[in-house]
Length: 83
Image (tube, rainbow, N blue to C red):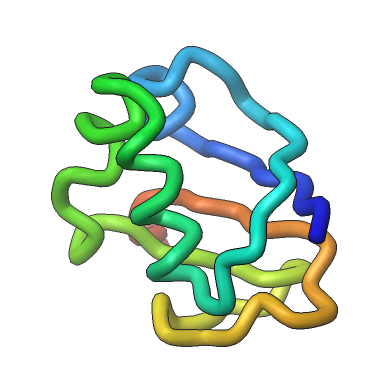
C-alpha cells in the first residue's frame, strides 16, 4: 500500500521533511515505525521514544497497534497541550 506520511514539530526537524510518500506492507502503525527506524539514523532518532509521539490515521487519533489496512494518511506529532 502507498501511504502519505506527515511529520510535525520536532519529528519534522529530526527527519528533515514535513511529508513523504511511502510504499509499505506494514500491517500496523508499530510495524510502519519499525520500517522507518530501520531506514536511517534520522528516523531512528525521531522515533527513539514512541511514548512521546501521537499518531493519527486519516485525521483520526489512533494507537500504535492500529491496523493500516485502508489508511491513506499517517500523521506523527508530539502530544498536544491546550489552554
